[in-house]
Length: 72
Image 1 (tube, rainbow, N blue to C red):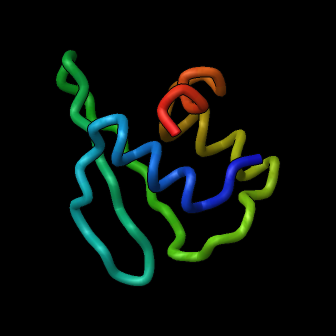
Image 2 (cartoon, rainbow, N blue to C red; image 1 turned 135 degrees about the vertical axis):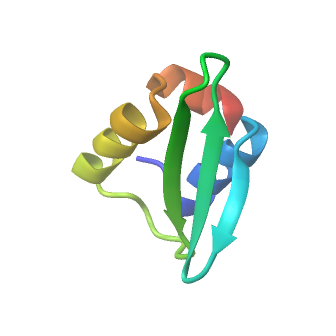
């Protein structure tokens, strides 16, 4: 499982916009069809738990594990 730093690096490398920074990083990415993807990243450095990672990967990032790995 990736850690929070790797998720942040993915967002930066994949062209996501950092639009808010409070106690977490908030990213968004406008897609060519006009839809908007959003995710938030903890400022912690620990590993993301399996079930949470599956939710983030499929519902927020909407990419495959292979694509994610290619961007970190």
